[in-house]
Image (cartoon, rainbow, N blue to C red):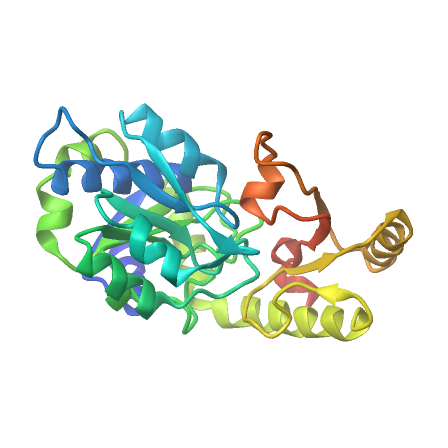
Length: 292
């Protein structure tokens, strides 16, 4: 069964070397560990990790520090990576870690990102939790791919994830990290296989719902309205608009998260994993396939 699963993941990622993990966060940590070992000539002077300033995930900020690396933030346009900024920021960095799509709502220009980072000798770690099994996920443009199978993900197994690469050395040379963790729940393997096989149905539900929301809320300011993604983020100007959006979500039984614009001197988790704006994130990713 595990071989069937690995073959499907290879198909979805175009990567030949796959390691199943116990958690998506473990996949992120493992990829960062690998990049740290591969792309630092002097272990006493570790190059920082680069990640977008919006549209990321909480452990993007936590794990580099645990590995003794600094963190640089790349500017974005509401989670859409600024390529000119990336050209400068990726110089002298260990790796660029980002999500595709950013914040689950804005698809990134993965080919351009990879080419820029490659020119600057910066490895690319692409988190495809929100795009695995779609044309937005292409391992040709990533040194490492990471993915979570957690709750409220496209592959909503509630356990596990993976890290992959198309370069054997990138996985084999730092292989000791994979001795510390493994996918240790064989009972879930048949269900994981079924969820991998049925991804098209999941995305069909997401796409149908995404389009409906954008149509229903066409009079509001939808952030990156014409970009591909799962969730829908809508900016609100005042309390009245915010309450209208909340009422819409509650009436339609959509889960949502509120984002809040904060100054550069403050931190807000939703301003990092979503957008640094007064906006509402309609969490289409939380729908279940049986809702189709």
